[in-house]
Every structure is written in structure tokens, then in C-alpha cells.
Length: 218
Length: 193
Image 1 (cartoon, rainbow over the protein chains, first blue to last red):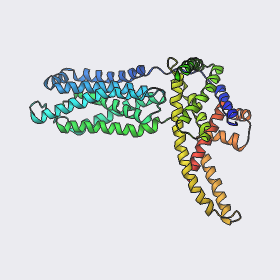
Image 2: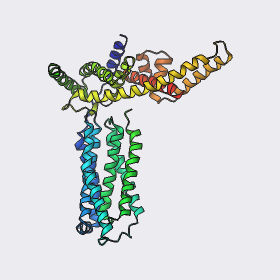
Image 3: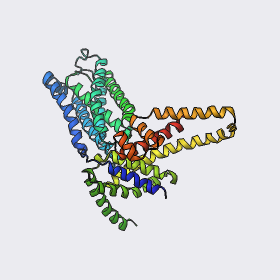
Image 4: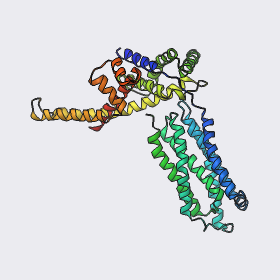
């Protein structure tokens, strides 16, 4: 077969061009690096605004605390899953890692919203933070976080670019929502929830579209 | 049915893991061995995916080039075969897609053949000129390294060693670039029509 010498030639030329490479760090370690950046920003915000207002809001409406925990879980799960899927040969099932966090996040926020609907007593004035501002915050903060994750992923080889990009968007959007929750006195009203949902959706879709192009194996 | 082959392929996988780990630290012999060993595996994956026989070699070549590019992502504590199969599968899907595009184009070509003017027709000359122009434009649109490889190896018919000396890049890099260039030219010319 004529293909055998051709392949042999290619193998020899790849061998001739071989240089030692530094192995990629394990996905969990790279996820930890990305999470450390998010944690550093969160620490900065907590230092500036203090933890007390946030904890007061959680005490007033426990669903907020659950929603916050869900968002944090989403950040960790989605970031870990995205970076794991960046390595060839890892199971697609890793994507499910993001699900528990997402369910808790959406569930608790939705529940809070419903309760607010029937007993709108626990409102903390949200007039100081118009809804458009939280949308802008989530979208703007997601951009550098997605860019950092994109850089980490492009150094790997994501063979399922769309799924990986969606997880990347989810991790970034959830991280932005967590950062927002530290200082933003939002209530669980339907408009607020809708705006958050819209912001997260924008980030995830933008990531899926752009990330798919930027992550596709060349 | 799998028992014997499974333990056999486990041993083989262990061997390939060791070779690839050595290749990551720059061992050329281990690298060529693991690549040569990979060919059959890649063909199997591609065949299972439904890649036609005449496209199997392309999948093998593309997979080997990808393996070379992303070899840093291999973790020797995990299966080499699973890592390779995932890459081969991706390349097989890519090949099926481009094969689909090409066969659609070939159907149109039959029509084109019927309507094709005689060789001596005056328009044939201008058509040939147009083809040449399109090819030229496609070559000009390639990334600089690939264009250089096509010009040196394809158009000026230099040997690999001469081209390598002239461009200052390695023979391996030149070949990889030529391969990539031909692939994107094929796609551009076939896809663009």
C-alpha cells in the first residue's frame, strides 16, 4: 500500500521535530488556579464591603443563602468539569458535575421568588441598585473570567468544544453572580431573578458561540 | 471474547504509556514507536465511526499531527489508548463532515461535466485562467509558514533538505505545514465552489 510509506514518512518527520514538552497540570489543579482568582476578587469585595450586610441578608431570607451556596457550587463544578473536558479521553459525564449546583441555585432562587410573591415583607430596598446594573455587572465581570478560562483551555485540547464552552460560560456567569451577591442588596423579586437569569443566559450563549470557534481543535 | 485480547491490549497500552511518557521528555525512538503503534488503533476507531476506506489514511495523518501538537495533554497515569481514541474519533468525525461536503460537490460536478464546453472552446481558456487565479489566491491566503512550504516543496520542487536550509525551519515542520496547506487548499477550493 502506498499509504504505509507516507505514514512512515510523517512519523519520521514528527520524530525529527520532537522537542521535550512540559506536561499539562491535572485539570483539578488548573481549576483551583482559576478558582483562586475568583476567590481573590471575592476577598477584595468582602474586605471593602464587609461580610455583615451579606450575612444579614442571608439571615433575613434563608433562600438567598441557599441560592448563594448553589452558585458557589456551580462555579466549582462547572470550572472543574470544563477543564477536565479539555483533556482528550475524559468522559462526557464530567459535565454533570455542574448540575447539583445549578439545581440548588435555580431552585433556591425560584423558591425565594415564589415566597416573595405571596409574602412580600422581607424586601430590602433594591432601588439603590437598578436591575440593568446587575446585568451589566454579571456580563462585564464574566468577560475576563471567561477569557482566563479560555486561555487555560486553549493550552489543552477540548474535543467537545461546545459543551466545554457552555461549562466555561456557566462557571464565569455563576462566579460573577457570586461576586455580585457579596455587595448587591437584591431581593428575590421576579424582576431581579429574571435579570440575573438573563445575564447568565447571555454569558453562557456568548461563550457557547465564541468559545466553540476559539476552542475547536485546529 | 474480550478476555484474552483485553489483557493483551492492557499490556500493549502500558507499553504505549511508557513510550509516550518518554516521548514527552524528548525520546525520539519511543515517540516514533508509539506513533507507529497508534496507526492501527486510529484506523480501527475511524472504521468503527464509518469513515470510508479511501479516507482512512487522511484520518490517520490528521490524528498523528494532532497527537504531535497536543502531546503535552497526555497524562501517563491514564490510558494512552483512551486518549488517542478520543482524538482519532474527533478527526474521524471531521473527515466524515468534509467527505459529505465533497460528495455533495461531486454530484454537482456531473452536471458541470455535461455542460462543459469543448476543449477548444474559447471560454475554456478563460476558465483555465480563472482556475489558476483561484488557486493563486488560495495559496496567497494561506498562513505564511504553510505558504512557504507549498512554494518551496510544491511549486519550486525543492527537496526537503534544500527547503529546510533555505527557510531555516526543520524538515518535519515543513512537511507538517505542507500537509496542512494541502488540506486547507482542498477545503477552500472544494468548499468555495
